[in-house]
Length: 387
Ligand code: GLY
Image 1 (cartoon, protein in one colour):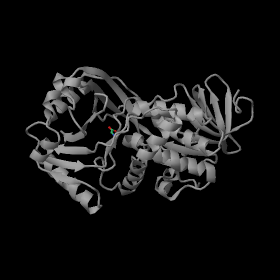
Image 2 (cartoon, helix red, strand yellow):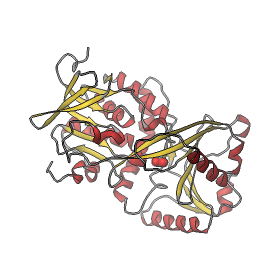
Image 3 (tube, helix red, strand yellow):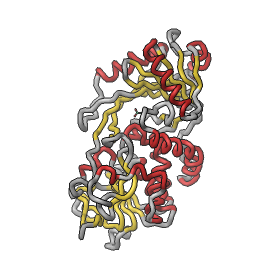
């Protein structure tokens, strides 16, 4: 029986057992807190679909410099985080791979856009090197002959979201966090303070602090007072998984990305031969249907970029939901409701921001002070009520 089930509140109740909730739980448990994580399926969620590109530099958007700092901080922690997680989980490898990324242009417009991105990288002092088409193809011979140039970013890497989730589940359990299977049906609020949740079974799980880490459904938890969290919009991404036969390896040696017809396209080659192709960006509610149109567009664009891709077995299609906050940046730390802490809204960067989110939110839970790095991402930026 867990402490919470026996009636005494846990220190921390995490609502949502995806990679963000699990990273917070693992780090908090390591700091001696008694943690319970509620989810119908721990380790599920968007990480089961995500390609796992760790791309703070190549996914950089203008005006998002605070997010870049957070992304770079997480990227810098990744190698140590992955090694510690493998050890703490009893040997579960995360598929973390320091492979670098090239972003290439297929036509003159894409090339002009990449040139601007390169100038922006240089202004910010980021490691980003301009490549001619020939240089890009020398690095990745499977690229189409028409590639017009690109960028080589040696610090944007990859991890396998599924293996990361599995390792976090094991590390949480080994650190003493209680993974409680169930659906949170209502946030409990007593005397204007979050005190736990009622599960769909009717059972109550109580805690000193509640961390809301339920991705694109975070703001939908019944009982959440109005205005505490902004609406988190679900942004669908369809993703394909192909398999590179031994004889064709290495098909690609690093992540390859491009903007094709205005959409982000990326190919993430894993060491085990899996090749992940993503992703569509669709805003149409909580729908995760894989559509013929989505698969067609991804294959059409990927074929334009890497023609040999049509020879590979297509082994899986899937769709996930990115949790998009109103400014596309995450919500980290205490909310306007005492006792309620947010770790959500990571949009396109959930896998990248997992290590830093775990560290920053657990730091807040253990010390009561939100670290400096997290302050631009306070959930209270969307509330009128003082925190
Ligand atoms: N970070 C990749 C995506 O959201 O599609």
